[in-house]
Image 1 (cartoon, rainbow, N blue to C red):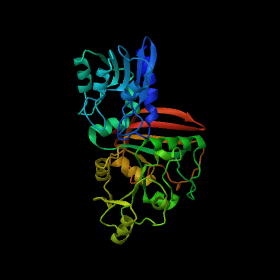
Image 2: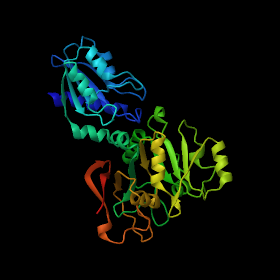
Image 3: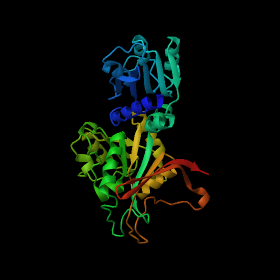
Image 4: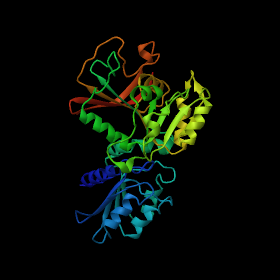
Length: 365
């Protein structure tokens, strides 16, 4: 029965996707006499947490009830008062927690506070599922570095474009819509200057105008971006950041700054932007996640520099062929098999006519 109600809390938590960054996705359900009498989720960053929304939604007294919450209730004052205090004040008798909050300000303290008030607390229900939903938060809160997803689409023979450079479209409509769902979930999207020059993308999400705060990041070591590029001129609330180096044209840099474009000057590494420096800077300004939609060169550099956490590969049922047709990962490449970038926890799913492979970076051995 506990699993049933925690599944509902997990389902509710997903509704906050794209609105709560850099906070976690959290859902809460209140049960009394085997009936749900209140439920809620963390709807938006800076607003009430899931526990408070669940308490407010209850039509009947919650005294003596059980609360199911996916993440440990907070015990400190942040943008909102402590949820643990509200749970105690409302007479909740039992609290079932999915996972402990790794935030040093909370971890274990919320549970301890509830127990000291005489509330029965159980921790550890649907842990793997909750960690998966909150993989962005769990990395960012412990490292202050953004969770980076490398997304690519390719044919069955591994090509991202034909020999002429044509690439629209490798995947089906359903897959492209799924990508916009991913864009809605993350805080930023990153591409290289090559992608901007070839595709002239908008780098926005079509799903919901309310989530148009997706930050656009262009890696452009020499600042060769065309000032008429869509990404610099799209009418949108979102911030645009260009990551460059001291090799950049300072005159163009000043023009961009006057137009409201944020420019981050990074050290160079092999004559390119130092990606580790960049992701650390992005973490410092509150960007908790990156969807990497770059081309073959940026993909290889990102993998090689170890900034990628997760890989998402969409495979369309097409074959292009061609020795010079580009593959999803370019760069210098590895010399030996035992230098491979290893992947684990691989998962496959069917989306329309395509296959999506998700996997996590294990590191090189």
